[in-house]
Amino acid sequence: MIATRMRNTAFKRVLWALPLGSAVKIEGPFGNLTLHNNATKTAVFLAGGIGITPFRSIIVRAAREKMSHRIFLFFTNRRPEDAPFLEELQGLERENPNYRLIATMTEMQKSNRPWNGERELINKEMLSRYLKGAPSPIYYIAGPPGMVKGVHEILNQMQVDDDDIRTEEFAGY
Image (cartoon, rainbow, N blue to C red):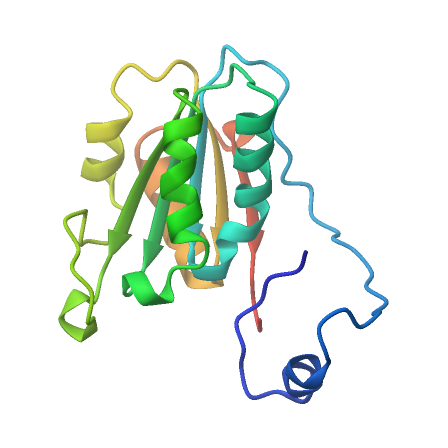
């Protein structure tokens, strides 16, 4: 499976025009966002928009294989209608008792859907509120470059060591 935001670029126009089932040659992925091995450490995924893609596969695998890792997913989007895989990620909470989704929608005034969850950008207070008692977290950040940089800075302000932070920027998607 591939996931992308459809933008008005030559590549995306060709991709959109391909019939379902077409063969394509893809190189990559080249990132290294894989779940750490030590299940006693909490995994904290911080995703913005299409940056959810590496985390989605990890979360699906954790549910299917009944992995014992405790996983928190903070997933920020403007509106629910902009949030890739939102319904699936919500459903996975029922399958995996070790997984918790904290979705936040920052522009609900532009949405046609109801939303009862968080409505602010991921911040220190939000992280502290949900991660109380989370043992030795390893943080993973993926999304637009500005979001990745900002969340990384928040974690550093919270005295999180860079050895416990892994990042992937989704620039120009």
